[in-house]
Amino acid sequence: MSIICKNVDFTYGIGTPFESTVLQNVNLQIEPGKFYVITGQTGAGKSTLIQLFSGLLRPTSGSVEVMGVCIDEKTNATDLQRVRRNIGLVFQFPESQLFAETVEMDLCFGPINFGFSKTEAKIQARKALQAVGLSENFLCRSPFTLSGGEMRKIAIAGVLAYMPQMLVLDEPTVGLDAKSKEELLNLFRNLHQQGMTIVLVTHEMDIAANDAEEMLVLANQTVIRQAPPREIFHDDVLLQQTGLLLPTVTHLQQEIEARCGFRLQKRCLCADELAMALAKQKEVIWE
Image (cartoon, rainbow, N blue to C red; front, top):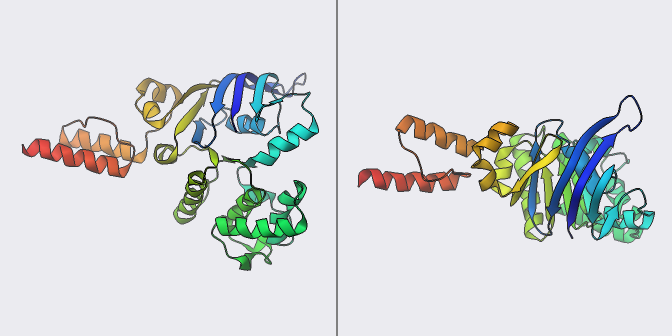
């Protein structure tokens, strides 16, 4: 299931004093089964872009094609329902969307809304809860008595419960402690390994460096680059233009090179790469 944007513009509040264009001439393609990271400075239009993917917003001009459905003002309710059934959109701070008396009721809402029977919905609720690493003991609890990390897992489980083909997440790790963040990232990695397409909006370059197969960089109201992380983090002009930071390991590499007076052959994006590169450099020095 792919997403194709061609020459997409989006403007809020057309014809009002609050009219504001946030996306212009956006062109991109999301392919099935890949792990994508969307990044860019605050206000670049990232959240607006992913809402176009699911049809929550419709382009002012240009085309957004999802599963062969062209999303515009003429798209009928049946096609939109099919798109939203397969694009699992998780907003920033999704725990704020929890509303039901119990976790089970919250988890069953999505599946029932998409046509599952109550029995099927309850089965899916248990599977989704297991997927996010929580026990069935949570089903009878109020979501509002849980910790922040647990609430976020429940909110994500509510999307997973109706089995979308693609999971699109807006800053899912923001505000979490290191343990909760790693647990969520491991969940996304496992889902990706099982064949699910992951599209993750984040400012955290370590996530992009370690997990993304492709990055989409937004600036000046458009996607200025779509490429693998290694290409992005080797492009100094792009990094300076967009204000993107280097991953922690790459920054550490530069510190080591500056202090030790040598330069490694390539920029390393993860700890294992840096360790191997330093080991090779040590062999060269001793020779």
